[in-house]
Structures are given as C-alpha cells and as structure tokens.
Image (cartoon, rainbow, N blue to C red; front, side, top):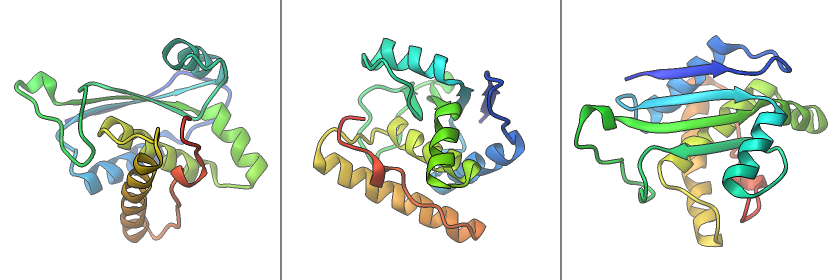
Length: 168
C-alpha cells in the first residue's frame, strides 16, 4: 500500500527522497508494507498546536503519532476486516524542533528524522512509554528496528526512547 509524505513547513529543508527511502526501509523491516502510512513534516507552531490539542502540552515536540486502529497490543499487527482498514495512521514530525535538537547535540538531522519516524511507527503499532515496563518494551522494539536498519544501510542510528522520559 502507500506511503504519503507531506512537507507542510518551509523552515527546514527536507530531503524527501531520502526520508521516503528510509521510511520504506523501516516498513520493510516491520513487515507493514501492506498498510498505508502518512508522514507529515510540520514546523514548531503546528506541532505545538497539535501537542496542545491532543496531549494538553503547550510546547513543540519532535513527533506525534495518530493511530488508525485503537487498542493495538504491542507486537501484534492491526486486524482489518476491509481493504480500507489497511491504514496504520499518521505521524507528524516536528522538523523544526528536531533540527534545533540536532544543532545543539551535533547530530545528523536526516538520521534523527529516521529515528523519530521509527519511534512514531512503534506508537502506531501499540507501543507506549508511560510506565517503566512499557518504556523497556518500546526500547527493545526500537533497538531491534534500528539494528536491522543499520545492518541494511551501514548507518549507526540509536533509539530515541533512550532519551525520552516516561510521559513525553
């Protein structure tokens, strides 16, 4: 099925072909190619609006995920009854926020986009980090995804979850 990649901001230049290739690799690793997935790149203003509206946090963030299927258990694929249910959901990437973090921490911006996209996909697949047990489970999944990604691409990306707190 399809991958929709939209860049709705003008603050940070995005290499869309690279991001598309990286997301396709992540989808392959997870075996979710048959599902539709939306990736939307937004600026700080828009990601802050979404974060306030849906999480009641009035600050920009790096990634927000909106799952199509509710109550998915981590490690289980979404069940669908109809072809139009072959949708994982949408991931909003706060690219301006990510760029600032990369500049502060001297990290590769496009590598960071790949890592936060993997994190967002984990959320679409039911993984959370609200408790220490969930955080551990999510870290294991992200570590697996990124180790496979690194093996396939020769890159050296590390999970985002190592840096996140329990309620972010």
